[in-house]
Length: 380
Ligand SMILES: NC(=O)c1ccc[n+]([C@@H]2O[C@H](COP(=O)([O-])OP(=O)(O)OC[C@H]3O[C@@H](n4cnc5c(N)ncnc54)[C@H](OP(=O)(O)O)[C@@H]3O)[C@@H](O)[C@H]2O)c1
Image (cartoon, rainbow, N blue to C red; front, side, top):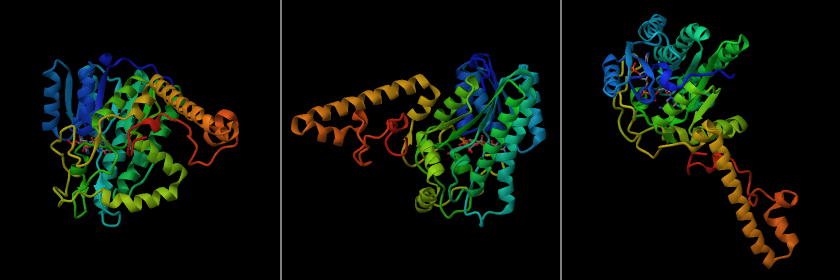
């Protein structure tokens, strides 16, 4: 897939979920870079505040109150963008919501509503956007999650909806590519992000919900979305910690199950009573700022994500790590050669440099990857 996309200051971008969190951050960042933005969500009052913030700085925005679960609303959203701005170049399906609770405790009514928003909202938005984009070219960006790859306890139907979004997005990309449609289709997979997401969720637990670590700031997701609006990318993980979880889950699924069972139940509970258990599953949230109030450590940037978006940076980082490794090995080797015979020094310290058989894992320096140079803790 190599679709040519316009620079942001020549684009009109439709964003669902623009009243809060990641969608709101994306709208503000896009407008600051000169894009015209179409703001969609159910909370018109909050969308007006975003519009006001954008226009007060000289930007252009259009508010279209929208329930993404309603195909009629989505058709109207596309029509309004075309009437008002003459079309659109990028469409971002960001609107989404979760439920915290065990699968057998949650009502069918709530489970179905979650799927209506998360899965059918993305399907409605994608199919409507593609009607226009396949004729005019542009980018479709769907916000999935690390939960598109990895399931976690207490958010079962949310994970199912995000897995479904991945299947849908991958199939749509192939169908468009196969007929040569000029549409870039990207799936964004954020790790846990510090937005009001847990407070907007429907909550069945006896405690207020909390995001499991590692947690990143929403501006990092917005930057990834805007990167995909200008560069044709298949998918982007936001947060090296999320990429690590996905990789471990692929190669060690049972170990990851056990780890999640052991850690993830308690890690998703705050030590406080539920604030608003109904959340905004069935009614507008009436907002939320961009950032939430996550009680633990929040990473401002993900070096992993930045490196994947800028291969030259990844290359430079790899080169630095490589140089540091070689310097380290060289230093150790010269010290060792002074104290031991050459053979024992080579066999014990730097097997790959001297073509000896591999040493046990504990002694091996291991392959250097961009990911392992990232933040301490969860980030790779
Ligand atoms: N925060 C995380 O940890 C995280 C991690 C991975 C992926 N994500 C994904 O990122 C996306 C944005 O989440 P966020 O963290 O920014 O949460 P958020 O702050 O709660 O924002 C959710 C947005 O979706 C909108 N929305 C919900 N239901 C809607 C509906 N039926 N129709 C139209 N809009 C609706 C909300 O607006 P109204 O209430 O005004 O309608 C709000 O603007 C979601 O798809 C989420 O699954 C989040």
